[in-house]
Image (cartoon, rainbow, N blue to C red; front, top):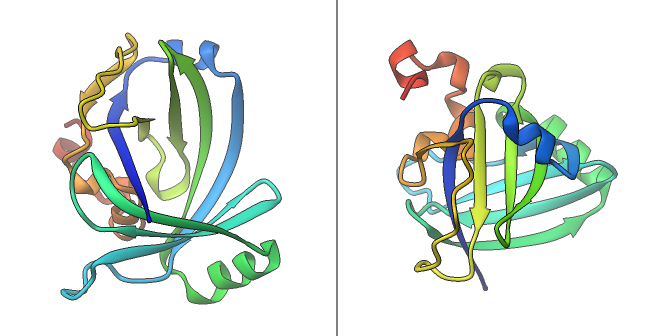
Length: 166
């Protein structure tokens, strides 16, 4: 079993773009409805370039969650997204930035989530304290509506203006 420990932030400005050393297009969809009362995990299919994976993640809120991820055939992933997805496909461009000994992933959302830019940083422990870049805004780690699984069921463009400006 793997344990993912990460913090999530909103991104401000555009200065981060000049620091990116890699960008890739991601398409992902979820195969279960997390709004069901018995849901304990999300099941995600992701396509990144010519690779695909299936990911199962616990629905805990906070810094740390159980996570399992396995590579699958691209054709299988495409078929699962096409026929089994619950909610819209999430499209985003992911930028990678090395900053102060940490790898930051900046997700620029497209489609139904356009306008949302989120930064994530994975850590080795919950007590790690990465230095925050100047383009980091409000921390949203504890707010499940910013989790991709939630965005697949209630996209950013369906939020009220107040929710979007949080």
